[in-house]
Amino acid sequence: MDTKIISVVGEKGGIGKTTLNIILASNLFYAKQQKIVLLDADNPQYSIYKKRNREMEMLDAEERAGLELYPIEPVTVQNLQDAILKYYGQVDYIILDLPGSLNVEMVKGLMYVEHVFVPFDHDELEIDSTSHFYFTLKNNFLDNEERVLKSIHLFFNKYKLVKRNKFAVLRQQFKEAGIPMMTSVVKDKTIYKERYRNTLYPIPEHKERGEKDIKHFFEEVSQLTK
Image 1: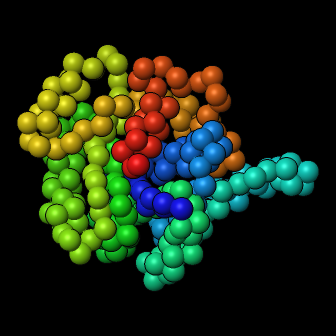
Image 2: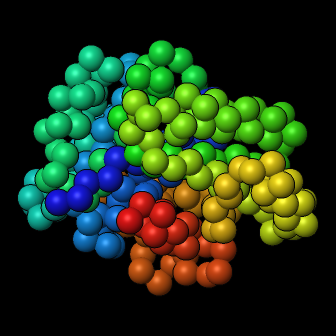
């Protein structure tokens, strides 16, 4: 099996990377029937691993018995390689949730990631830090033959239709700077955190199918990692 190792990642917290890693994993597994493992490397919080446990505790024994779940494993930089080798060749995607800051743990984790997806919005300071983060990844990982990173993809997170002109200008500026942008976006919706950030179920089939809705983001991730 051709396993892809991917991660939604950013150099600071609060950008939605954990939420998106969960929603992406759940929809690839439950809606697209892809074999998935989600490795929670955000030590010591392990927020995804703990969330799965809380969700399971809310179910009765009969409901738990009827569920087919993708595995979520807490990992450290010390056992990350062993966890990857355990699943490599056995699943379609290994999704790695890394710490929300550019520290030693993130750098060591990035050594195993093949495709990186970087969310950001139109905030001026975030634009500067994201462009710097992109070139840090490019120079140290993408252009380094000793690393496994194959691609870096930036995308608009917390996208607002009322500010689409500003986002369009930013897209053009990044294009001129040689920074690749995804065509799909992730809109600014509270429902992603309140309802769809779930490790047990996908987004309902009839939801999020509009032109700029999140399922287009999932489809583009699948295309870019083929």
